[in-house]
Image (cartoon, rainbow over all chains, first blue to last red; front, top):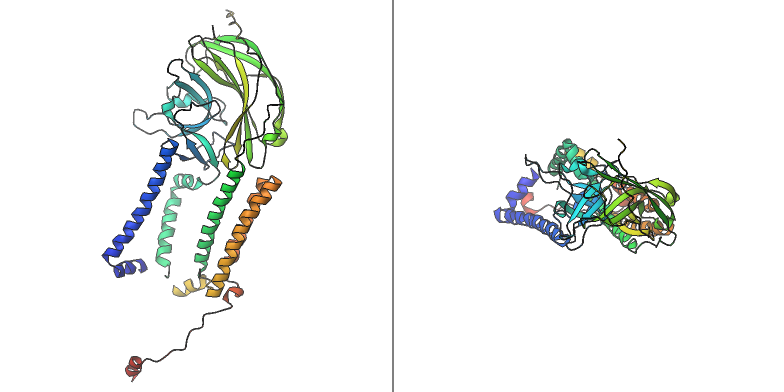
Length: 181
Length: 180
Length: 91
């Protein structure tokens, strides 16, 4: 009721200006995200912890800040986020946050062959590699430099409880209609 | 600000900004590097044996090495208000016959409280299977051992450091002949 | 519907709004600084979180309620003036 009247009163030009403002905000957000990815040399500079395999340090819903320094080799003990390449069905594998357990550096190329393990897991990740004997630098999204607890839990809750998504959208719609402004 | 909803919304937004400032303050306060804990280092490692065997997931038959170590040290200076846990890990490094440089974590421990940070470990076996990039340790260089730590904060930057290393490298023992 | 909304809105007058804004700005900034300083001094993250969290809860709960102090200066509306047109209409 209120919103549609407001829009009709504004006229087409004003409405389009509002849309442009909104799109401008979205575009700036995207620029900041991609710019951060460029600076940190990783496609996902900020990730949410999805599993409990790094407890008690990282719990589901914690936020991690990653970098992927180009010239610096990885070191043992680094906590890295890696992705196994998609399998034959094309299904994207989820990123995994684990600690580097072994590094084998080949003599000529200095290529690093990496084995990881979650702190909370009894054994290393070889079972997660789907046939790959070692991780290589190309599989690694970045290494964890910074940490912020709890902040990402909203995204996990939205995924695990889709009813929450609908409840939130419903609630927002209700508020928009009920506002007496 | 005249309706309760507006007050709630404005105050929440301001509190969120204040929370971000608080997080930034804590992160900045935690920037200085942690104190040096390498002064009280007592690390010694002894080789046990090298066996040939086959374990699930690791493919064909290969050499496995076994080492025992003793360690005592005081890691309490690493714990401050922003320390969530200290991850301690023992690293073996050597170069094998093919020229591949190997660094392997053979033991680790999570220390969650300052009270548990005075460690006295005796006669400890390696926790993880110690295997080579190729299938054998034959003709590999001697092994050096270093104990490292990783401080994981409540909020902020992760820090890494070294506790200590052994003075002389250890030789791989000859592979035990298979009995029947 | 409108009446229900009027009840739930907990309105406060303009002077009250100024007071409320002053209160939350001062308390939130003070809580932030106090939480950091006390936490750092006592080397206790629990103290830091408790101070900031406690202040947040108090602020949100306290300012939502329309205390009488916030309604002490209600808006004074001018008396109704009969315009010439509406006087003609009522004739």
